[in-house]
Image 1: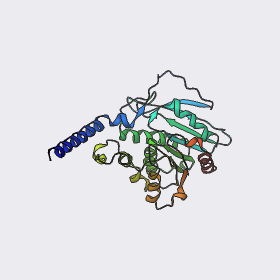
Image 2: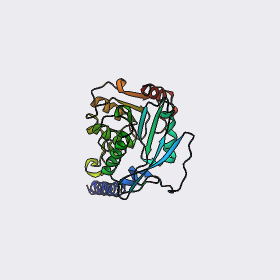
Image 3: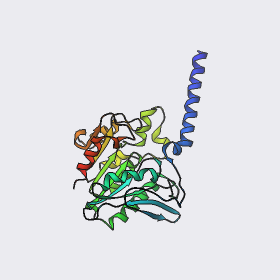
Image 4: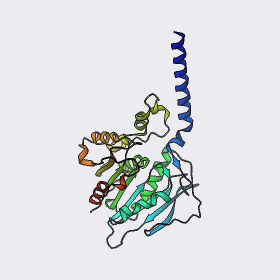
Length: 269
């Protein structure tokens, strides 16, 4: 009995320690942002402008605006990237959209790259709306596509639920960060623990525009089942809104022709 009691005590202490670590370091676990010097000069093959947004005093968001052929321009993609790195990495994905005749606007979140400001879930949504409102002054909403990747899918979905874009495209989306946490380690009370819950599931049903998802079956970060659950939430068959990439992982969908064929079809008009 004493041995069992000691084991239970050790298990309880381990759980308390894990809970404490997850509480203190959750922001570092969720965000893997990198910083770059303000005077850094971006270099990309595509034509682009560096921009700044200031949603409030003391907050500066660095952005890149990539241009397509102005004669064939179909509209604008507002792109919300994943949880790591900065625009030095993400800018290379602009070609997927400019070659399909869309301009694309990418921003770095607060504390990513050159951007400044205090980071929070509320701030992410405020900044997204600020940037979208800027886009609305230059393009009609039926010419604006919101694109979210990984972490950015929750931001993109919330934004689409409050606006009227042409389309919402989500690459490797999660049901919520609570759901992602539970897929790794179910014992922790993520609904109470997480300051960043990112409830895609609560926002998605309020989205009025068409929604399309891309997800790999071997995603090691956000389980493929997340997209299946989102399709079910919308009362859709997965085949209706989800492009499944067999053997696709979290970071490499762009290496598959299935992804590019589906994206090209969606951006055709």
